[in-house]
Amino acid sequence: MIGSTQALKPTGSRCKVFSHRISKLKERLTEAGIDIALISDDDSVYYYSGYYDYLHMDFGRPTLLIVAANGESVLITPAMEKDLAESSAVVDRIELWNDGMGNEWREALPGLLGTTARVGIEPALTPPLVRAYVDSLVNPERYCDVTPIISEMRMIKSEEELQIARHAGQVGIAMMEAGRGAMGEGVPEYEVALAATTAGTHKAAELLKMHYHDSRMSPSIHFMQIMASGDEITMTHHRASTKPLVHGEPVFLCFCGMTNFHRFKLGFDRTFWLGEIADRSQEAAYQTAVNSQAAALSALRPGARAEDVHSAYAEVIQSAGYEYPFRCGRATGFSFLERPQLVFGDQTVLQPGMVFAVDGSVTVPGKFRAQVGDSFIITEDGYEQITSHPKALAQVIV
Image (tube, rainbow, N blue to C red; front, side):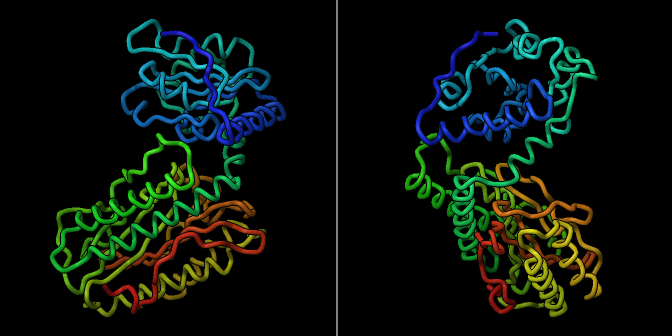
């Protein structure tokens, strides 16, 4: 361990947001009888502390946030991130460590976790490297799952988060318009992806300059484009390739993951055709996809259960003779997948402030797949749509 340093907490509204979240977490831990939360998920570390880096576990370097219900908040992060951590992390103390020195990131944990405290972890999100060491310190009876507390806190977005979500929608719209505009016969898929990525980055930079003070937050769109065309359109998460677009064939653009502004993720999808619809049998499947999303939206409101939205969507698809679909949608936020999911069996009651990606989709196995998707904020009396692009059949022929 390199050493301990008092965090130079940022000031202003940003500091208040993260300080409030940690205070609320401490209250929830106390109510649940949990003494310490050990948080290892990148997105939750950011949610509570305001600190983020990009490559730590990819290079075997853990960053951990330790929050004591009746004590301090401590960030454990590599020494190479010292300047970034000290200027952005809203915590009480930062423990820095370096490769090969002492017990590295492990060194502070025995003192922080103690020998009798009840320790809450995120079992499904804790890296095996971290879990193996913590298991050597914490007896099974001292463990508890802090995931429900964290996911419930993150489920209802604050006004600050909702504003970021709306701006993420603007980024997505810019990307969809640019991607569509780049389509043409013979144009390789990757050129469409480049156009979308460039437009999204420019829009994100514009919004960051106008509305945010965090000059280190990158506007760059860095998630690889999900895109498929022609007979590969049934490959749901196919990435943009060198394949040229062909007149009459369908083209699928998915910005799930790419619509990522200020770390907030949205879902946004459209299916297009180039010039005309060469295979007219695809029209019925596409229209069913559009109709299934409309059915889902008719059920999307506060007080509804998550599975009810999925049921409305699935009923349209199956009644039209197509196979049972995958989930209708998912909650999003600083993570790609949050609670609840719009799927059979999830009985979570929808509440104002939740954000969802809501899809309509139809698959004809081995032949064709159509999908449309948008993102929405649940409001007091319904929903607010934050992504938009035409989806009537005549409007998606490029």
